[in-house]
Amino acid sequence: MNKVYIVGIGPGSEDYLLPVARKEIKRSDVLVGGKRALALFRDLNKEEIYLEGHFDQAICYIEENRDRKKIAVLVSGDPGLYSFLGQISRFLKKEEYVVIPGISAIQVAFARIGEVWQDAKIISL
Image (cartoon, rainbow, N blue to C red):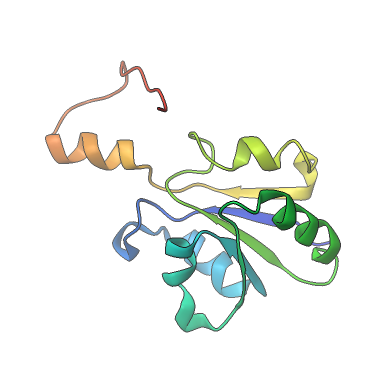
């Protein structure tokens, strides 16, 4: 059984995409994600599953196809920070997926203002 790759693609610019994320995306047969995420990789000519507003359909697709296709779920920022990992982990066991971290928007924001953020309180609105 293929593992599902949950790939953080950073804040939306190829400049912030980690090499390991790029590698797994290229190795995948199917990309699952929002319009903006899918648009970043359209030149790879992968099968695309549009995610926004269709979470249940995407989960069904993943469950039905992961045995025969390598699936990468593209999430903006980092998968573990207010992102899709919390949702997909309710449907898949930990041994059924691999998380590829990404650079979060909060990391970029603090870097741009030149501030440390180890004591920051992070919330999602």
